[in-house]
Amino acid sequence: MRIMIIGSGGREFSIGRVLKNDPEVSNLYFAPGNGATTMLGENIAIKDYEELAQFAVENAIDLTIVGPEGPLTDGVVDIFKARGLVIFGPSKAAAQLEGSKVYMKNFLAKYAIPTARYIETAHIGDAFKFIDSLTAPIVVKADGLCGGKGVIIAMSHDEAKVAVSEMLSGKSFGDAGLRVIVEEFLDGYELSMFALCDGKDFILLPAAQDHKRLLDGDEGPNTGGMGAYAPTPLVDDIIYEKVKERIVRPTLLGMQEEGAPFEGVLFIGIMIVNGEPITLEFNVRFGDPECEILMPLLKTPASELFYKAATKQLDTLNVEFYEQFAVGVVMASHNYPFDNSVPAEIVVDEIHHDEIAQNTHISYAGVSAEDGKLYATGGRVLVCVGLGDSIKQARDRAYMLCGQVHFAGKKLRTDIAYQALR
Image (cartoon, rainbow, N blue to C red; front, top):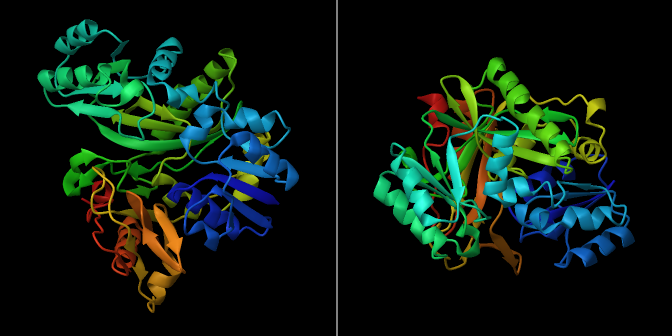
């Protein structure tokens, strides 16, 4: 099987890594990939989606997997399908579930899917009035795509009003913030859950917990994610069933009603409040760094999973996962998430300890290659992943690997998975 992965981050590297070890996969391409994906396959420097689809035709690509949200909301899936190509991901119409938070919240309300009380508006007066009706903290969201940073948790009414003002004026997120959502803050614990969907059927993957804040103890600004672990012991079979019946199934049925059947990864940001799952948001692709910890737990061949999801055959698949835990620790550059950092050479010590060698790996993200060396060039540079028979063992192994990786200005949290271990 010849497979192409669209994207350039750690998420795409981690998908490529499991496919590289899949005996069914003969050729692996990344478009555009990063400085480390050449360890796994071939990078393709084609940006135009029509040209990329033509490349897929000419090179007999059997399956294309789309990693990031940008190409999905731009309609890359529609372009590929118009040429009869097999591609994993939602259509442009279905990708609105992430592309527009207003669309998503109104969809949840229309199909009675549990979510927080909210208002969506472009009028500052309406937003302020709704803010005054809430108890702080208050959540303010920009409508459009903001690279995972368009959500503000305001600790006071005044802070919420400032956030709304800066979004609606275009100061915070440009056009992405010209319509906003203000919603009540839910007090509970947050989970990341992923359903692989083929428009009708779905498979729910083990629940993960992401760590959004930059600093230990969940302090500092929100980021794209500083680490994650899975599966989390905070979810039992009862919660899994509630998520399936109250969120995933109604979403798939609702999207069919909307004329945009959902195919691909439905990423559900969930808050558990008094044992009840409440939908915070949808994304239409794997989370990052959650993908980096879910992929190595997958026992079923990844090529089979993605291909059957992309060809509406999930009902014929029995998916299995290893009975292990995975913890991923993000290493970020010096100025993340505030500004770009000076490129820095990455040095990974030779690993002599069998425990680290056999139970850890690196998923590379913001890196470039030059003269046979890797350089940290992105905000989130890489993820050190540890596997184990317990969360503590997986975490300890991930941090052992972190100690082997060096580049100038590296920053990381030291408390990933603390929720499950305290």
